[in-house]
Image 1 (cartoon, rainbow over the protein chains, first blue to last red):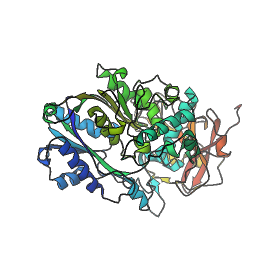
Image 2 (cartoon, helix red, strand yellow):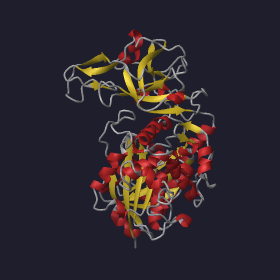
Image 3 (cartoon, one colour):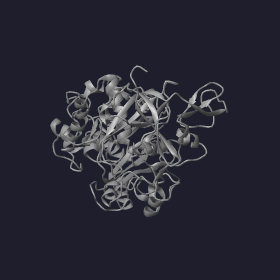
Image 4 (cartoon, helix red, strand yellow):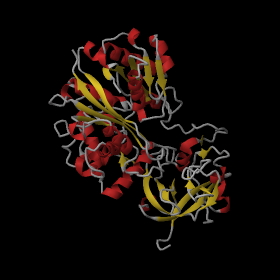
Length: 398
Length: 142
């Protein structure tokens, strides 16, 4: 594969913005296109995750037809879809399209309006979804019939069981888990766009209400409204922009176990194990080369899973690795979730991590910039049977 | 394994079709069933028309003992469905096959009594024609 991220953009991010997903997406897209030194006439590819998808409210953002029409794009290639290597599947597909010559500049976006949708009085969990309902009794088909009828409504419930198994097998503790949330909040304090910026102590973390054991409130990310866009370009374009680009060095898209939340062979690794292994199979770089890591934290535990899956610590060792709080910090050996992650900066659903990784590689992360000109960044998305990872390398432009 | 539970919390119902009807109605005679391959004996869950182990096409519902152990669990406190009472969501592993698991609920004891490796037995909770397999603690020595 041969492609670079030549531009990034982001709309306003916040709670209850009450703006349409398309409106936010246009802001992010135009921002990214200009950042890449392009105009809408140059964009010949379009990709998103998940595309138009019926539930839950505010989850999907606009589909590619809406964005194409709004920007009057003339496309050679386009895609939207929820299956694949987690949220990053859209970006990976864009890299493939550019590498294969199907497109030269692909606009990739992810938009959420979950905060406004939930504030409008609708449930974040779509109890009526799945089809076949009627008579006012909610029904659930497909794979969700194996969780939701047993009152396991949320990924919080599903992943809490993975976390509990990790605690059982490796002795991982609540206090160790807390470090993911505390680190995110510390970094969010340096990110003006983060939604939660007040400092958090271990006592604050422990005092928050229980959601589903062992997850407390601050183990769960915060729904927000916002759109993130990136431009994936042919590598020659690197010389045409006035800032460094992020070359896509490797991707991890593997799924080698069963595609199921509760039948996957190893609950303590989930599919992150497979995506992480594949990422390193495709590069001569090693985990020691990574300067900054943006690791999915839809739930705090997932960052620990990714630390292990990407080889930043041994299997089962993420608890001791994070325990003293310094290993994840901006001035630590491997700064993690430097913008605050989804726990404190808000659930931009995967693409907040991509945006932040590129900012860090470009040296444009402001007060939270990692020192020493980071050259290599790892990005990971997903949990359960969905997982995707990226390895990005800074390439200086003209 | 014939007991049923009296209290019935709110439950989203499954969409029953030809592939899963055996599972969701299995409790009518007090037995939990999964699909099993006639050829190699592999247990298939969720239901699938062909055995992924041997490729066999003859798969049919077969009862399991209904005994299992808690592989993992969570005690839910958040009110997703209007209920404010904490309840235990559990992942039960059945001895018939390593990795044959079912996400369900632990009943018949306080939610916070749940623990990994706890022996459990399946009981059924009827909602009309749907029989939800849930589990209750089983005697440790069994």
